[in-house]
Length: 263
Ligand SMILES: Nc1ncnc2c1ncn2[C@@H]1O[C@H](COP(=O)(O)OP(=O)(O)O)[C@@H](O)[C@H]1O
Ligand SMILES: [Mg+2]
Image (cartoon, rainbow, N blue to C red; front, top):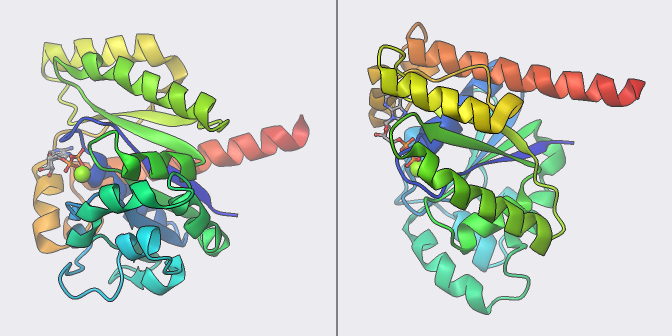
């Protein structure tokens, strides 16, 4: 049974899309079958894995709003083991079109249920907003990864995020555990980064991933070539860090599984 992880933070520019693309690709590198779901109308995850947004047969919009089965919209990418449920510009309308539909918060969950067993991991790239697309992503998810950029205002967004998670937990009777808080664009040469990182580790404790993602030009460049960083420059710090993150998540899941078998 695949695990669905939403990569979420209502703040833009914190590294959600970069994490979705590169974590998905790094998991696929471990010979896992991975589905990347692009739930952001900007479609940066779609173009970031080399898929053109303008002549797709179906996109995430058709799955959410037109009742198209997820399997009909999912396409393979150029990268072994990595599949994509793409976004195109139609997805902009989804927030409006969903309002009048039945079960509007459950559409993604129900659509993914049919393909959940086909993948080991399903990663959802969420939009930078607390809208119906984000809500659908959180309701569909088994857990969430929260990328946080180590900068001055990082902590300000955190309380809003905690409120949202709490609302989902109560409103939908949905557990929604935090898979991990991910420190992104980390630069340990600066005092500010170290200070913010310490504050986040104080606040979230063990929920912060051991792996941090350094600031890396290669990570910013790779999408313009339509490649995950491991296909663009596998020896870069950015590639190394996402490979390490994939290993950490896979190891955590194995540890949780054997703990539940013993307990
Ligand atoms: N670790 C990093 N090092 C350097 N640039 C990064 C890193 N992570 C993200 N970026 C760049 O920062 C910008 C915002 O990242 P993105 O992943 O698109 O954030 P979000 O999806 O949260 O809006 C992009 O231009 C991206 O290439
Ligand atoms: Mg994004």
